[in-house]
Amino acid sequence: MSQALIFKQIAEIESGKKTQTRRVVKEGEAYTTKDIHGFISHLKYPKATDFGIWEVVTPSVRTKWKRGETSAMLPGRGKKGVGFVRITSIRLERLNDISEQDALAEGITEIGMQLYQYSKLSDTRFTAKDCYKMLWENINGVGSWEKNPLVWVIGFEYIGHEKG
Image 1 (cartoon, rainbow, N blue to C red):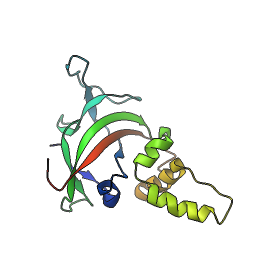
Image 2: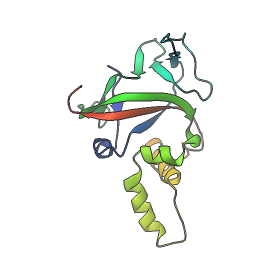
Image 3: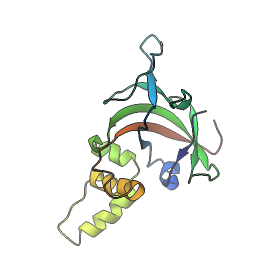
Image 4: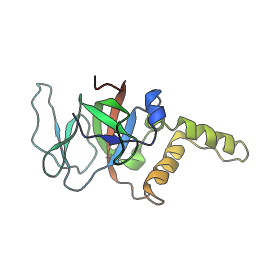
């Protein structure tokens, strides 16, 4: 089983509105890929965008997240798990490269609706990416978006309260 993932948007995951998460790449983390013959690569260290990642490992070379494995959902650090997700994809990209479609997959629809209502009162219009930027800074601190870190983009599907 992959390392647990901490989420603030549990309801969005359970409803299927959130199917992706981004995590800042930490120093020393590495990854492997799998080729078309099923062979796993040597460890690679994140430097730029990459797709088709099979597994993310910690600096001590322990599996952190692996495609196809389940991961417990935690509503906060040290809190009890509230369900499970299955990791369906992993890739690397710069935070600011998020697409509109991926911003929606991050589960920003509720926040986006609130911002849309606000924007009707002014001439300001917010895209899904704008809303995600606000969510990111709410979670990670003011100015964290401008740092544009390299992030793991983890795709997942909610599988319920049983490991599956």
